[in-house]
Length: 112
Length: 113
View 1 (spheres, each protein chain N blue to C red):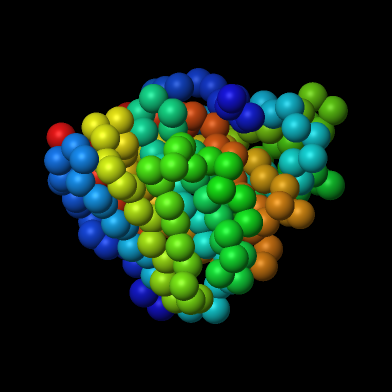
View 2 (view 1 turned 60 degrees about the horizontal axis):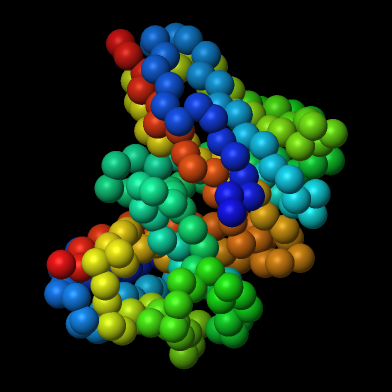
């Protein structure tokens, strides 16, 4: 099994640009989570899906952030427009029933 | 606000020593308490987890101690090795809420040779 796949691994963009992060969960997993990691705030849950349906998006910082899961094997996190304070490592994780979450390698986003 | 408080922020232990990391929580609805290990440039990986119906769980050199009344839990790493040098995160979640994780701020562990 390839594990959770995230792309791109690194993204550098200018303030105001649109950024799209992608995630492919482990096959058969029915829950998908997006987290953000920064030195100041640590690891924060942004949003999670169960069976492709968004369940809790209370962690999404503001309307500039949106996430979709059009099918069981793909999810996107979009930031539009991006700002320097969005610079962070964004992780996607997936799980089957029972709690254990498998994290992807992360996308390091730098907004200049 | 941080729902799970973790200490210390950093820890240096000699090889062969015991590493102890502590966490505390307030929400009594939490019913799943995992510890994750993260190496630089990698995603967190589950190390060990406990549910509140037991007070201790051991897997190899790693032990979780859980005190439900005090709302505290801790990770003990016995016979610490240089390869254990990493950042450790405690977390808490609610099974009825999909197990979305509330993380502590992390502890950077350095095991010296």
